[in-house]
Image (cartoon, rainbow, N blue to C red; front, side, top):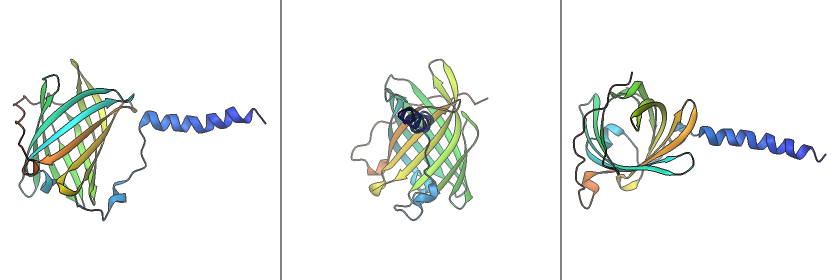
Length: 201
């Protein structure tokens, strides 16, 4: 009988460790159906939006912090998001998203450093994006996968959390907080222009 305890511990610990390493989540966007305020990114990001973010590795160590200025335009069919990043070390970057709605709260998006097409699905106050990105790491670029969640809060605050995976393993989390410029008491300076990243191969 005493020998069963290590076996039981292993049975319990191994699935838990696997879940922690892979950042698995059973959350589904349909779980948020009917929640308010309703998030429709073509409405939320029309105009200028500001964001503040951090990247933590899987050990909980803060690796980078940054701000983003986003200029969005919606023409009734396509949402264009011109994102300009300013990192705490002074580095700048830029990404331009082109996003279309495909019906029933679903979206498809493309950007120069995104592999293929990003797929999004919204319900209630939530949106889930899934895509692969050429993420700059030092002088290199890693092909990583983003499981990206957004939740709209009262007062037009938008909370964003994205788990990042490489080779199927969870390597860290990006956390962001967005506000439309019209909701800010004082307007922060715009992020300076930066060239677009090289296209994902």
